[in-house]
Length: 111
Image 1 (cartoon, rainbow, N blue to C red):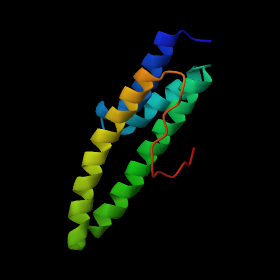
Image 2: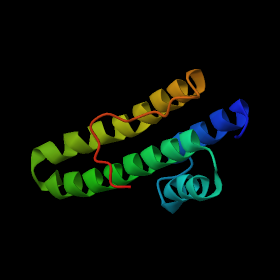
Image 3: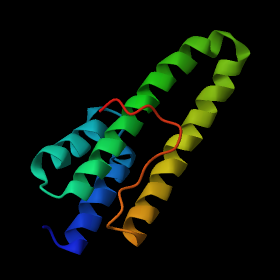
Image 4: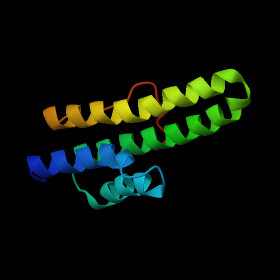
């Protein structure tokens, strides 16, 4: 099993990948961690991060289509705020409780 510090680092990196960019890099980092890590907690955190990123992209597309209705603009702003706040909460939880994988609320788990 990997050391506790390495578990914290990889788990936090998978949740914080969204801050590097909003392109493929934000999904590529958790995929790489998922494929290269042997630790079950790190893998669970990487899967959860992937699910969160995929959900953000799906919601972003739907809300962008709703931009023609006035509510779409506000939904996109809310999505932007959530895409910043939720990974920060995940990183804090992972660093405080490294043996428990973090689960994002209200997302579809596709991976």
